[in-house]
Image (cartoon, rainbow, N blue to C red; front, side):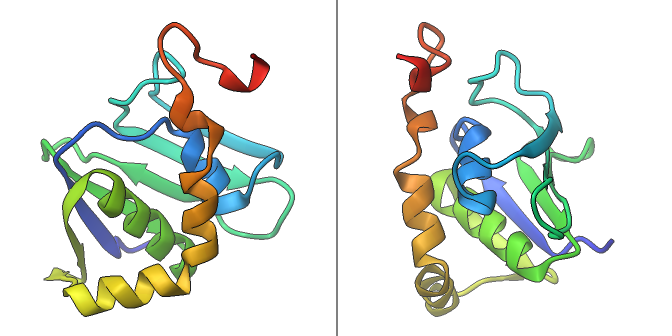
Length: 140
């Protein structure tokens, strides 16, 4: 598996469960691993998601040991990789690269149009409302 996308993150991340809504849609049976502790943490550095209801490959979003803020996004699916990297960049990043090259504004704009439905789904995710006092806003 080759590293295709890198995102320089400058703010806290979204609740990792937003990525489930983004990549797999809401209420899907997924497998996850990572270091989001507590569950609603905005400071996770490792995330793995696998949609158990489809043949889509897994995706990994992680901060390599040699970096302080440049996350790597890996998947055998180009679309999942693009989408996860795009969302991470839009939410909390200031630079997105592929194959060592920074994506220009017109490319980001094209990707936003391509993935508009998935980005809207993430934007509307209930997990944006999670907090230390309410880690499960879907149960309220």
